[in-house]
Length: 175
Image (cartoon, rainbow, N blue to C red; front, side, top):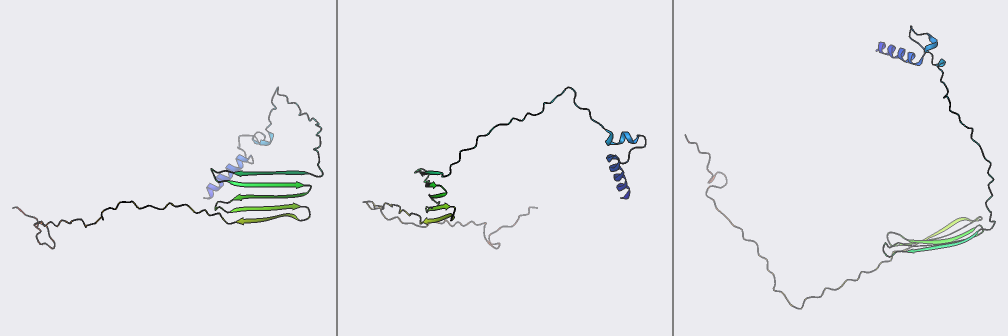
């Protein structure tokens, strides 16, 4: 075990350039003395920085907008609405959507610099629609009552079969 450790330690020291072979001078074995030649005939131009004047974006001290949308897809059942207005730093809006269970969630929100963001969530119960079921109409004619009888069971007696050795023949030895 110690021999393997010593061999591995010497191999690592030789690979790192600390210890070199006896036949090679130290200057040749040292990686510090290795130099690399620069590529010949390849020239690179220094990057040129161009100063571009950027126009400042227009600033609106009192922004205002108003938008809204509504979706009602009868094929998928998707139904939602949204509406929002902004007047300066005050934003007011409302959106609603139909949840998977059929309930309608409505969120009404406001935001301003004094009170921050406030939202009120309202959830209405799902709308349950009663399915229309057609009444079954009895036919005008009557059928004969159907009777059920048990299927007949056949009982067969075989002279060679039985229980507890009764009627069972054993092996026959012919000799």
